[in-house]
Amino acid sequence: MAVEPLTIAMPKGRIFEEALDLMRRSGFAIPDEFASDSRKLTVTLPEAGLQFFLAKPMDVAIYVEYGVADLGVVGKDVLLEEQRDVYELLDLRISPCKMAVAGLPSWKPAPNPRVATKYPVIAENYFKSRGEQVEVIKMNGSIELAPIVGLADRIVDIVSTGQTLRENGLVELEEIVSVTSRLIGNRASYRMKNTQIQKLSDRLAEVVQGSETIDPNRERSTVDS
Ligand code: PRP
Image 1 (cartoon, protein in one colour):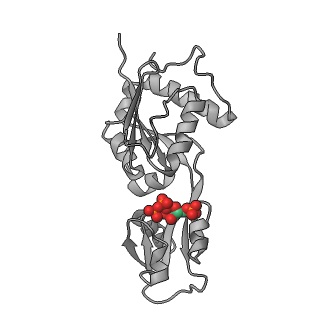
Image 2 (cartoon, helix red, strand yellow; image 1 turned 90 degrees about the vertical axis):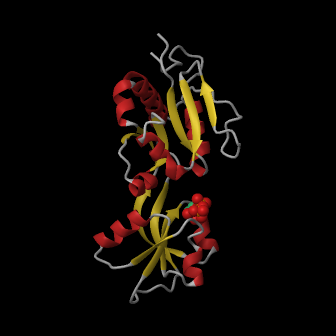
């Protein structure tokens, strides 16, 4: 009996290359035409029983929650922000970075503080847990601009290499949480396609834990049984 392929939503952008590399090291021969900067948004590997598609990072968990994708690769930052009803199956330990509060080196507490961020839920929860009242302003990117031009006195954002903060004369003030990418699963898919999902997840876990490379030609090269 033909088995339906597993569909995996992959995030465009900074996580993509590392996620692709991890998939390849796990033995999945994903063609080069599937690239973060390409216009091609889907690729199917019939022998492996897999279909990948490319989504905006913030949307990956939505596709998985609604079951359009069985699985997804997504940063912990997105999971904390979006709070989608999905299973978190595996820490892939790729794209490590942190969520932090940052500001100008001269920052000091002042009345009516404003915080700019792409992550309003994380920011609200963080400041609430500290008992600090702030006005959170939701932005869509280039957050580092906000303290420079005086829109906000602090930001909550991802810090990876720290280069964007440095180049804009900002400093990290507090770390909120460390972030890596996770394998997530749709709840119904996890029951209906459990064997396939478990096999794929085990295979990724082997590579994640051992930094080992699996031969794509070895016997266990499909996840459809
Ligand atoms: C992210 C984040 C920071 C930057 C941090 O932005 O929002 O701006 O990367 O990385 P770094 O510490 O290595 O400099 P992204 O490039 O995703 O674009 P955005 O500004 O549109 O959010």
